[in-house]
Image (cartoon, rainbow, N blue to C red; front, side, top):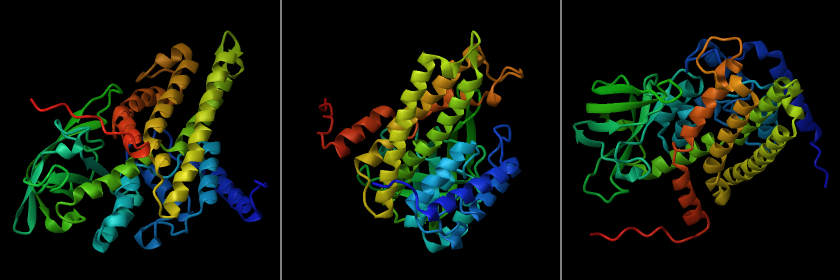
Amino acid sequence: MDLRLSEEYEIFRRDVASFLDANQDYAPTPDDRGLKHPKRIAWQKKLIENGLAARTIPAEYGGYGAEPDILKSRIIAEEFARTGLPKGSANQGVSMLVPTLLELGTEAQKQAYIKPTLHGEMIWCQGYSEPGAGSDLASLSTRAHIDGDDYVINGQKIWTSTAKQADMIFCLVRTEPDAKKHHGISYLIFSMDTPGIEVRPLVDMTMMANFNEVFFTDVRVPKSQIVGKAGAGWQVANATLTHERGMLGDPNAAKARLLAIATLMQTETINGERLIDNPGFRDRLVALQAQVYAMQANGLRVMTSKIQGESAGMAGLIVKLLGCELNHELARLAIDAMGEFGLLYGQNTPYLRDFGLWQQRYMYDLGLIIGGGTAQIQKNIIAERGLGMPREPKPAAV
């Protein structure tokens, strides 16, 4: 079996590599903070123009408009990992809402929201979890009733990432309170500047407010802002959750982290010995390398199923669980490789490596093992939907 790439793909790789090597100075760094930092927006637009981001999104919606090609997608990912440059934006708007709108949105919604979202000009947050509805999301109680041409929303969301910075929200509300648990839920999109919305930051252990509480008091949203049919929002929500889990467990992002750690271990030393030459650390790196390559192979399987319009089955179900745990283990190795310098965080010192990025990832990635569907919930999904095992029995009513 000849696994060499054809000349077409070799030329494509050279073109991608040439572009990235020539444009390294334009890429944002970890110090260019802020979702709408000018360098981030400019970099995203440059990547789209050259087919390295939003590659298969139709051009009429602001994407590049290329046909899906598994090998070209893999080449792009490999070249980004090689250079260590940031890939195209992966966030709640780009990675979760855009594919949902492409699948289920109206033409007016696609025209209004996809392009500014792809180009980094419109930031989104996700209004799903509530104080009494986290893992059991279908128990949500935020309600919306119709008044004339509007939905009027009252309730609360929690753990809402980027709500303080977001321009827009996609939000699950109960519009038919008498319907069964998974019915009567609607999926609305609306501006975070709408009167009646209050955002309260929640500071996590990274010492940043990555999450927020959001309160709705008589928030009026036009009925045209619904995605899908009224009362059928659970199906729309699950489409978004599928895209979220793929984003959180992206194997190509893990590959980039792996290469960055390998570089770190070539410079960090213990008693004058490079970490890469230490058998214990090298074994840990190689073990994680095997997991990264396995997840990349699984990613190709998922992508193939998507292109063929088929369910990825078990291959899709394992992505979030294994991907998030792998990312945390990668960050843990980086922290250990830095030794005592790995304990530094939030301090202005020349000993801080990579702007404290690995410390921040270590703490934040631990939260992602819980967020977006806890590891325990993911295991239940894998067991029941992937392996066909019986559902966990519910406790008898007292």
